[in-house]
Amino acid sequence: MFECQYCHKKFKSEKTIMVHVCEPKRRYMNKNEKYSRLAFYAFNRFYELTQATGKPIDFDMFAKSKFYLGFTKFGKHIMNINAINPEEFVDFVIQNSVKLDKWTSDAVYNTYVQELNRKESADRAVERSILLMQKWGEEYERPFNKFFKEVSKPLAIHYIKSGRISPWVIFNCDNGAELVDSFSDSELVLINDYLEPNFWTRKFNARTEDVQFVKMILKKAGI
Image 1 (cartoon, rainbow, N blue to C red):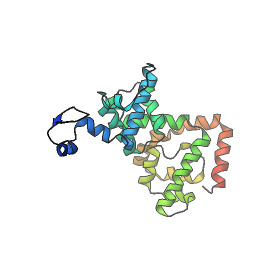
Image 2: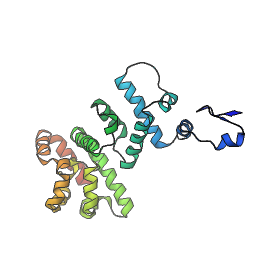
Image 3: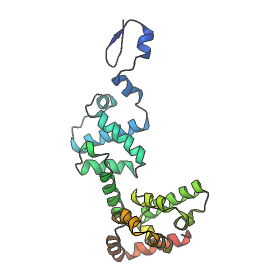
């Protein structure tokens, strides 16, 4: 008899056990998939931040956990939405006591993006936004500094809602402001919660040195 090391089911032939795939075995087979590694990271982080047991967490514990499916669903979600700073997103849902079954909610990620935009340093926001523009330029074979003039409105809305382009950049260059002005009322409804003009006006008034720094970088880049 041949016994599966994962589920302990017994088989009469080696050929049969070779093609056998049970749920425990499948979990180990997918151990190195990106979504599984993200899920395991989140599982580890959850125990680190909430349990304080001091015990090391290994994949065996994760694979046998009743929360395995919930965490792997979250790992796939992170990949599907191409989440910004996944490690910070993991900490966000844990530290805000979001229930596991809500971690894949659009509303939760939207709140995360809004908080990220608000708290992010000016230099990090500019760096991240310019990297996005460069990626756009490569994909569409256009100079990256033509981003605000040539990006399609649907794509611009997606970038704003997903936090890919920071208000630090949008509001501190003429081309960014012109793009916002070109949106229709219905389009502005979609992005207003992410742009938060009143909040950013107050922040820029309080952080004049950062504003000048951002404007200088954008001017040098021709944006």
